[in-house]
Length: 174
Image 1: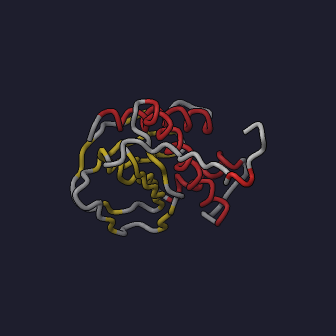
Image 2: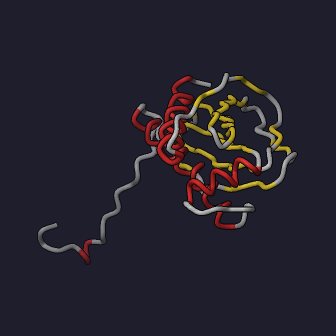
């Protein structure tokens, strides 16, 4: 995996989590894993397609997710109800969105999917031939781990097509 793909995610996660949690976030030691990924208690999944293809997993324990949702949403959660789950999925979405903007600035435009979430430890997800770069992040409310299974995609230019109104709808100044 290109380091150009790693840095936008690490810096975006640090920026967003530091801002939203009101504390410094420490990165643990990176490692590369091959083979299937086994989910933690809570796993947010977001895919990228374009000049960068692959999947990002944000994983954490249920306890960390409940604490994080409480801080993010400004209310005390006892369980991972639908609102707490939404908050956790959204933090993954915001980090990935910011990272995709940084990737685009570096010349790697990619679209991101809507987040999905797996609840429950031990589900196996295959990233097929994509190795995963594992990025542990430590906060006072608990750890979050980001798994990046990314590679350079086939689409290098993802510009939105310009759509023009049919001639019948044009005004004289168009």
